[in-house]
Amino acid sequence: MPATILDGQKIAAEIKAEIAEEVKALTALGIRPGLAAVLVGTDPASEVYVRSKVKACEALGIYSEKITPASNVTTEEMLELVADLNRRDNIDGILVQLPLPKHVDAKAVLLAVSPEKDVDGFHPMNVGNLSTQRPGLVPCTPLGCMEILKRSKIPIAGSNAVVIGRSDIVGKPIAMLLLNANATVTVCHSKTKDLPGVSRQADILIAAIGRAGMVTRDFVKPGAAVIDVGMNRVTDPAEFKRMFAGNAKREQDFAAKGSTLMGDVHPEVAEVAGAITPVPGGVGPLTIAMLMSNTVKAAKLRRGAGKRATTTARGE
Ligand code: GUN
Image (tube, rainbow, N blue to C red; front, side, top):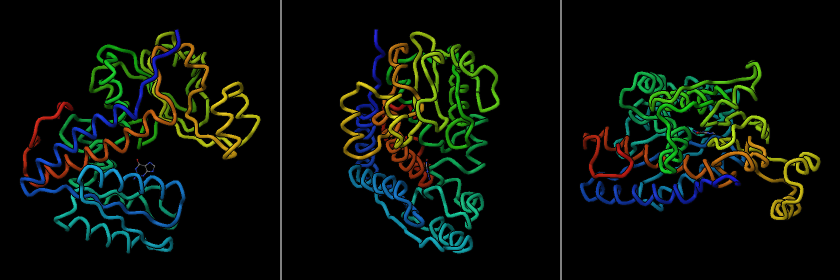
């Protein structure tokens, strides 16, 4: 039986509807959550991401501001900008879109963001909060993966979870969230021996490597839930053929654009897995939904509205 497709668009829409209600209730109390998105330079992918984030704010009634320093901005100027946003009362969340230009000290900039406004959850204070199970802000993509699992009723406690990838943004925090939810967690990376064999132990397999179609059917235990965090642009016709030969929709897409977006998981995995997230339309929409959720959470925590101003199904 082919895998159940876990529809990220649908789950994200549910979450956003809940957040919109919460924003309405908070705004009625005089607390309108606000997000500042800082986009340096003209990286096309970053421009698309930031535009979607600002659009999501508008749709949910969250105040947003896009700040666009030129590519030659200095680290000092970025630190001043962040300090100003830290002080501003109508800004609850600060998001510095990555990557920053090479000459900017990204670590210093991220460290300057007040942990209370760190809606990306990248500040070491929030990393520590997550690893010691204290309240704090958690990175959006890992939170989105957890929402997909929970809302799709995939059992986490007691399961074997394997995370491929150990980045600070995705691999490590998702491993920590799964561990906090009582999964038995293995984190794999480029030096892992017998990666397919280790991955095949997984009831829940998280692919966060950044290599198109690397996770093939031999990585997957029949019936496993596979969450594909990858987002890769395939432009090589031979590689495209290896992935999507016979897929009319993809062939059309590739012919029209000369490229197609795909995850880290090979399409053949859908024949083995029990459930799988598509790319696009899986984890991606959740990342934005969870950014909105974090902005509202930051607004509540910082304005002293308590952990919950209204009841949501997210159990926060
Ligand atoms: N660039 C790629 N992913 C992310 C993310 O999650 N947050 C930010 N700020 N930049 C990114």
